[in-house]
Image 1 (spheres, helix red, strand yellow):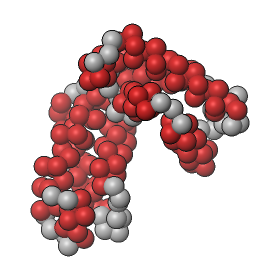
Image 2 (cartoon, rainbow, N blue to C red):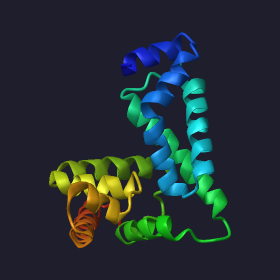
Image 3 (cartoon, rainbow, N blue to C red):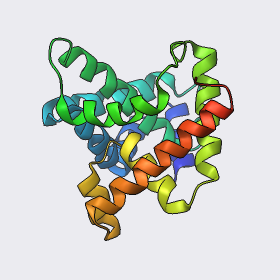
Image 4 (tube, one colour):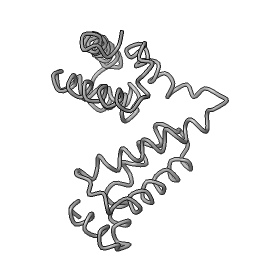
Length: 185
């Protein structure tokens, strides 16, 4: 079913909208949540919460593209649940990915402020648009979709070392770019 038809079903308040979203994007949303949470039950709940959020926000929202909207909701809900679940402990897999980026974004104490976060997002998107396609894909898969290095390597028929080196170089370039733009020190 086309996204515009699904959105139309939301606007009509038809229960078919939920079924259509779950059928078309449920597996993707669950994979995003699973990579962050590492718990199938929490991931399923996260997908259900995503469906509820979509139901509650469409209308008035009219997301385009729908896939990005749903992935963003899922990722944000999973991150909130992750923070709650690991308040007293460290989740090695996810923290490793964040630590990799932490070195790049170190010194951005005001990133949490909404205005700065928007500038940073815009700068990162601009930076990625100027990189080699494969480097951008690796970066997004690792730091947005939280895929492991081995998953990325297997998907593209590369070695783990190849992916690791490319991610490292991209982070270094990003750090230089963000410093030059005055977004980090």
